[in-house]
Image 1 (cartoon, rainbow, N blue to C red):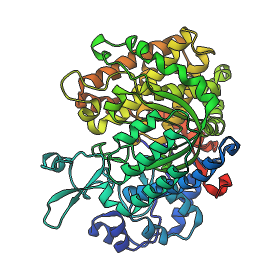
Image 2 (spheres, one colour):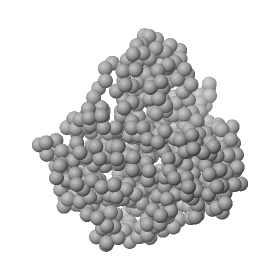
Image 3 (tube, rainbow, N blue to C red):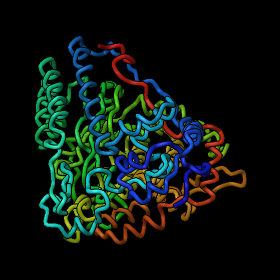
Image 4 (cartoon, rainbow, N blue to C red):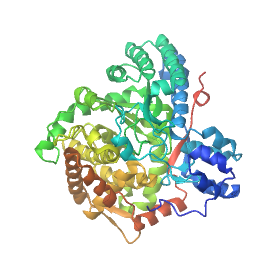
Length: 559
């Protein structure tokens, strides 16, 4: 696997005893016996080079738009989110305290906290602590060292469950433990905080949702609260909370991780976006793919909303930070009712100003830099989320839902679909006069967005998706790399490549052909040596890769 950054010097980096490493990482004792005491300085050197890839950003907003009661609710929601952060640590790296106890350097502790463990998430999960070895594909969701075949052949009823872990006893017998039992104490505390918030809430929709979500956390039954969340229309405050995304489970892409976003709605921006969801059925009919792959009708009770996010916790806060959310993930709810696409406006603006613009000045052709616009960036990200609702949810080959058929190959391909169909939507809406601006703005900003996202590495779903798009578009001549080392979009060929990649991905999903998807990943989701050199230029220019947040009640000035 190619590295996203220049190789750093030999990383024997932390003086930790073999017994502690064994407890922390489940690595073989024999391997740890071979690990000599290591130089702390090497770790400090590595962190000194890697920590600056994160730009520090304060998460704030204008609280004057909130009612007095909403300001009382806000700290309760943040406290509940903090519990999700603790639970995510237990899923991603349960031995956090043992690891951090060995580290005295404050910057190194910061780097461990940003990554939720000893693997560098934006450097293809590279271990930066001596002896830890590769990151387990199944995190802590499965017994260490278990094979996929062993789980697939087991008779466990919940072997691919979203809300349980698989454990193995001393006799080798496998069993599943639901989240609400495994994390009962923490979930009860979070549930209680949501109930307290519901008592104060004045908005009827928010009150109902908070109560149902509180119940869901302690039962793992989330359907009713998902419907209630979609039914909320007039709330100013919002919280997305619970075990939601399955990116951390790279073994089967089945088990979900805890996370939370605390959000404040921008009602004016949200009102401007409302019209686009109603256009989904027409856009679905016109998808550039064979008719049999677009017979499903997208739900139109979906919403497009803009928010300022004031707190991230858990999965969404690990490594690269999410700037837009499309939920719920339940395909049945999506088909019946749709989803809510939440645009995190303040986080998006920070990434545009601090990262996308500097990248564009370095890598986008000088003649096309004029087309880099925030409104185009916002629209491309927004329609990426909307595009999750387009295409196909069930295979046409009798293999069930696409997610079930593709398993661990599902997420990256779905993200790739959303990327290219989002661009397809922008193109179509511009032609219809439903969007303003120049198509050159959207295509050039999309190109810059790819160059931003591939820096996350190809170990992550969005990184794989972006590399597939980059390589496919390059093969089709949608852009060229000039002799000055910059990228120049061919606008006509960009549109053609967009349609052809859309058809390619939707056909793969509709067939449910996991082998074909694996082949596509191996061939397309890779970083070439030439591109790597260009990405290295960004690193040498000290252009950040992502952001890390200063957040919480103190930053907001609430208690």
